[in-house]
Image (cartoon, rainbow, N blue to C red; front, side, top):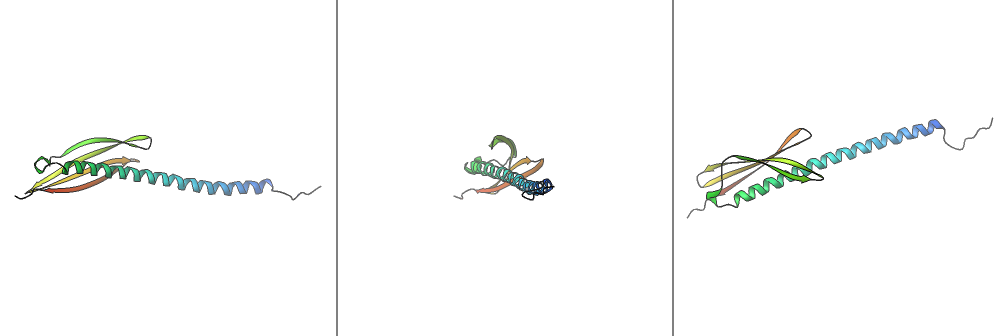
Length: 127
């Protein structure tokens, strides 16, 4: 019988494949986690942008036109290749010569609710 020891045996090859697969699966899991985290961050940044825009629009009005009545509306924004719906709730409080405005933006990601809230105030100029 001729013994040839120049190469890998089938068992050595299978062990090498198993080791490579474990490493690649770990790498794929890391990529999957990074994509989910990135999507959550993009959704949160978009919610902050919506809340900031709504607050800016409200505080840009003259003092007497700033509304403190609670209202809700839905806003749809494009995120990557799809659209995401955000619920925007505006409320406020009328105090003497000051109005407080609250804008809350809520959305769902992976069946969990998230909220971003901004607060602003406008004062009436004393003459």
